[in-house]
Image (cartoon, rainbow, N blue to C red; front, side, top):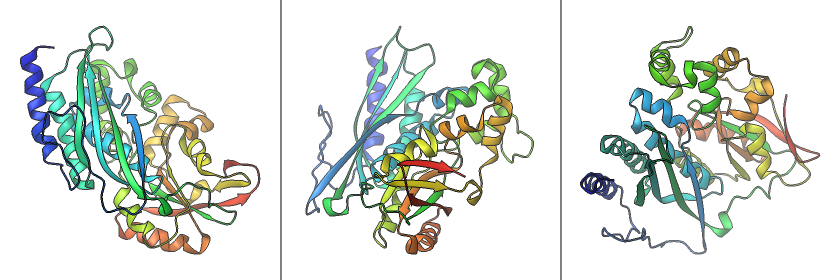
Length: 337
């Protein structure tokens, strides 16, 4: 990497990142690691998650919408640590490419910073890398590690889930950050590369109120504020971030032995984007449900008497939510009926 270009990139990132600083951050600039002093907890448990945005970056590159990718990685990490009841505190990012474009890096970081400010998350470090011969031209990889904290006696693990509990689903904003390879293959010529793919993204499909590109690049929703507010008002026994593997592959992760989740598909609206992908790609129903979130970005397991109150509180917090199913006795698993 040209050293002057690198210095330009790092200077811009540093100024943006400092605008996210919150109580607990000890960084002054130039450290080899992010520094954070944890205070205000009696018996804290740290919860950490690392993930990437994946091939959604290819669509962002075609349309020059890199800020969305920055927001996506913040939401993804925050939702992951939220699954254990943790409030996200800080994150570090990683941006890599064959050759880094300062304008692209700046747009990604600007998206991160705005999302971090909205969620009270500090961006306290990161790394950029140029790796010719590893990444293909114009490809960009974006990943981040997020750390949150929760009191040990408030930790959510799923172990308290019992038959009779209700499953509450919260609406997704679209595909979020999963299933984009399949979506590109189904919807775009050339598997999502080149001018033909760009033109397809700029069209508005029949029955849509937005272009295909806008529908596919809807940001990954962050549920942390609304759900943390909820956990202060009622018992939440399980929290599930619906990512790769869809509803069945993720909900089963929190179920204890002897518990089986049953969800009724008609209880929530499935956005038309999923039907378009399935129709154009001739994708089997089972593959759709194993790949995409199908309109639910987060699931909560709560005691049955609290289910309707949970929905009301979530909607008061700006989310759309539904009672989508229940927990039954039986072999550990998930069924969609």
